[in-house]
Length: 125
Image (spheres, rainbow, N blue to C red):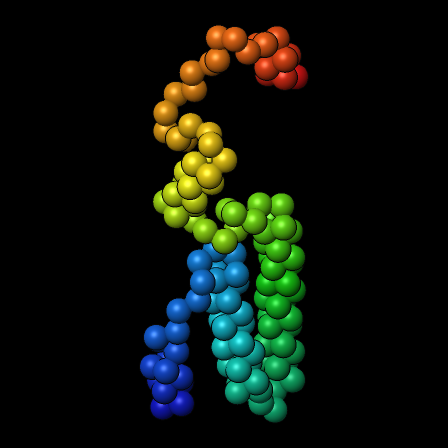
């Protein structure tokens, strides 16, 4: 039990990044902890061992599925996957400013000299 307390104390200061990678890193550490407990609890009782190993395999398969889905999400939405919440909104505001677009929280004012038929046809699709 002292070993577990020592590990908990030493990893308490570990900070992972935000977003998908950071969240899956915490889950990975939990999965390592689960397998450490399973291996520690193995005994001469084959039924209990089979249940423990089955539960570990099931949790590991769910974790692998989750990581695959979150990585797919990260490929499709890299900005949202790296950041979260207010940081993502600030990033979008910065990106809009760099591109010369109006700030995100301001209403769009249409250019009176622009051809609005192309915009209207896109909105109808």
